[in-house]
Amino acid sequence: MTGNIFENASLDNAIASLKNDLLDATGPKISTMRNYRFAILHYDPRQEFKLRDRIRRLTDDLKSQGWNVLLISLHCLLLDRLKREEPRILDSLIRTEGRLYKKDPDRALNHLRDKIALDIEGTDGIAQDVITLINEFTNQYPDQADRTLIFLGRAGSLYPFFRSSALLKHIDGKTKNLPVVLLYPGERRDLNALSFMGELPSDRDYRPRIYS
View 1: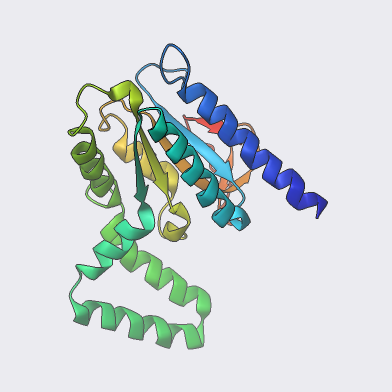
View 2: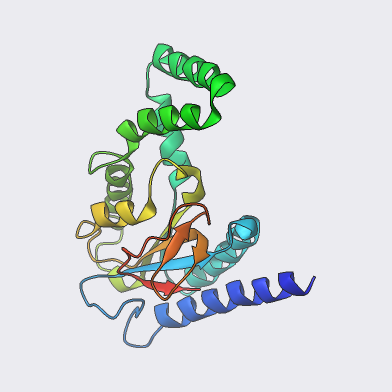
């Protein structure tokens, strides 16, 4: 019970700090770099539903103060891409994964990862879908950049197919310099070292400020 109390407090404190920086009197201050307005809100993957509840509350609060907030579900983007595949390709992928799993689960996972990665990685993958959604949303509010916020959520659905650090690299410079916050499920193992879902090796390739 005690552990849950401390975990909840940590998540609430991180969101409170993010909110304070967003509402700074001089404009959003989620980054020390003027032309790099990305941030990461780190949380324990076991707190996924608590995180969604807190982000919903924060979104409602910001909207009541005149903000425009877009929550992009990376899970939905992944499913949309899979749905665009021909049924025969998906059927073949499922059959092969099932056959390999009986022999070697790790081999089955690697096969699935290699095939799905072709459709979601790189500049033409999910990153492009994110950029398109941001552009469509912000075009509705062309003069409100300092009161527009983008959340990238449900990142856990990309595990183990895609590293979120790669996503941020691909969208860097293509988000009209709007505040973008990645909701990151994983472990923080150093000042700038994050382990995606607490499973992958620590990735230090992060430039954004980390709220944790």
